[in-house]
Picture 1 (cartoon, rainbow, N blue to C red):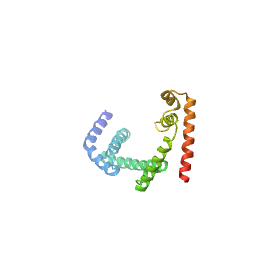
Picture 2: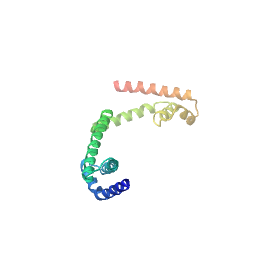
Picture 3: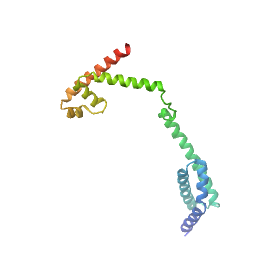
Picture 4: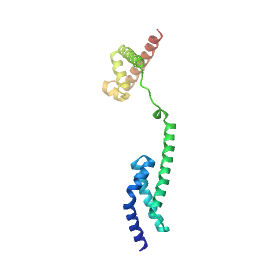
Length: 173
């Protein structure tokens, strides 16, 4: 019978204090969803503890447990944020937009690359563009163009060699 009374008391305590506990925990965590999870965990802990000991003031117990869980949550969040920042530092840093000069230089590089690719023989150019620009595999390019995979490979190597040499010559002049 003691178990049933404890369940009833917990349900009553839950109804009486859930909202204020969520508000309190939300102020600590700055996240309502996390606060709700923490309050749920707090009531689970309360239900376990009621079975093992007499709790004089369930409201105070819940607030203490919720506060401890909220601070544990914040510590865990800080650790995971620090880990993520260490793993992926670019995600946390502010990325500046490219300057007008940089955009113009990039556009000039793109135009130059188009010009160099246009110098390729038609079959070589088509094969090169399908592989490099459309990211098709050698097999897919072979099916699309009707030439063998080794032919595709030779065209792409020829295209790469041509682009490398022409860009080197253009940049040096």
